[in-house]
Image (cartoon, rainbow, N blue to C red; front, side, top):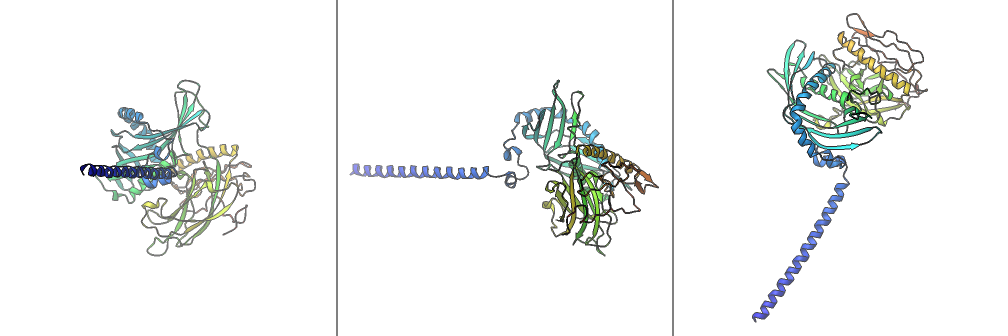
Length: 504
């Protein structure tokens, strides 16, 4: 009996063991299949999908395997950081302070560093991508993250307000730095380095502002002014296609090929706006439009009083330097006593435009380009514009480059004369370029406009000194009058003329 019961128990135990083993094998197989399916789905995700899953702080090497991790470099950077920080502080103060002054917003009379220390925490390099996009050059994209402990205090002055120390706290930087090394035949084998911040992913600079021994409310809108100044400097000076070219090693080298050059002319006609938001308690808003490709070359329309459906029909000519990455930015403001209020903003990527083809389009105005931070998402109306893009020839490109340099000098003179408060001020026609027979019948008509910067009266206006070049490409007028309203840089155009599109 004992023998039989033992055999039966052994058989049951053996069958149970085999059944359990079979179940475990099946379970492992199902888990492997599920993992394979998940991995296949992950491999099909693009960069935007990865950002939704991991957030904005997702390292570039995760979503782009071509970025290689460089832990060894971070270890060396931590050791070198005390020396690098000391050297960088002097360079930053010397190079950034003039930019703060140049891009200083209206309402602030002085913006300088009173204290600058980069702290003890070194930046972290999440990944590096090396590629050879052009012969004789090495392109290196560096995914840089920095959540350091710097001590940065800005001395901010405004009219009738004493200097207010403003501290930048909790500074965090997330960006991809592009470094292009121009190779040479002589030691150190690198003749120049081009440095820029990639526009995609968009650079992020996060910080909080705190008044030291004062109040941020002493200057209305101070936080927004500083935010706009920082963002504008990044966009207009450092964000690709804009770049900084640094010669290296004392080798005489021509860096003109590395510098940013104009590639085309965008003729913009601000036609009208519809259903704008009313910002006034009594009456209606007094809208005007500020247009730019680069923030340093802003132009604006006349003000239409007490109207939420204004018609401007004003034309401006703007230089484009990289059609693939740049956009036309259109901002509608309400003219007010003190600081003007923004009614809406729209952006038009230049890559969507076809060369030598006039196009009229209606753009929806948004409260901000970054809608994630906006609570009021109500409709802001629409704006209708007509655009025509012309690609430069080699001769036109060189002429436009010289004219850009000249216009910056003219703006500085206007600022020194008190006509404008900052080189960032939008002027009536301050960045216009009027072609002379360059469009081949596409609608850009030469007008031989004057270009100059003579200051008239007591700083009420600046008019051209008559630089007329028959048959030449360029002509540009600067005006900054507070007594007269000019309708942009050229006469209003009929949408039916000059190869323009028919009205919608």
